[in-house]
Image (cartoon, rainbow, N blue to C red; front, side, top):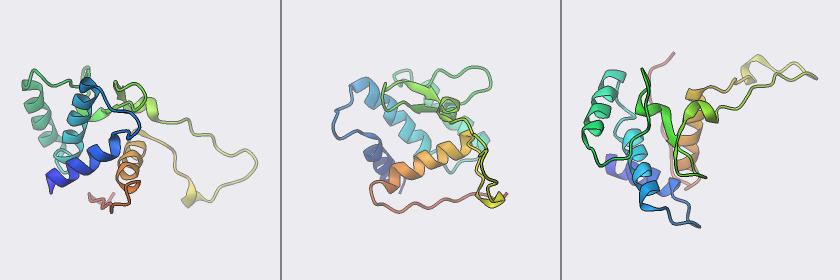
Length: 136
């Protein structure tokens, strides 16, 4: 199942109109490992996966700093470079001409932007998506 998840994610990330360079393909491979194998892991186990990948000197990993983890990065589809998820979070503008229903308000943050990206990557292939996790 991990292999299928990885291939589905990789297929969704590769632009059919533009063949990725080996460098970009390497970054996509790392990203796919992070979000297929690492997606189900708890934070301390994700750290173990990150440490394991860091030991592999031939992988192009994100440029993490301080307390960051590799899970805070995505491969930018336009440039093929690592991009911090925070740079993909749009500014939220509260409507000035109306009062939105409370349950319809979704203020963008890293978690929901990342989740939306991953769901969209699989769903645009007309494949099913199942989210699991703790209830908050």
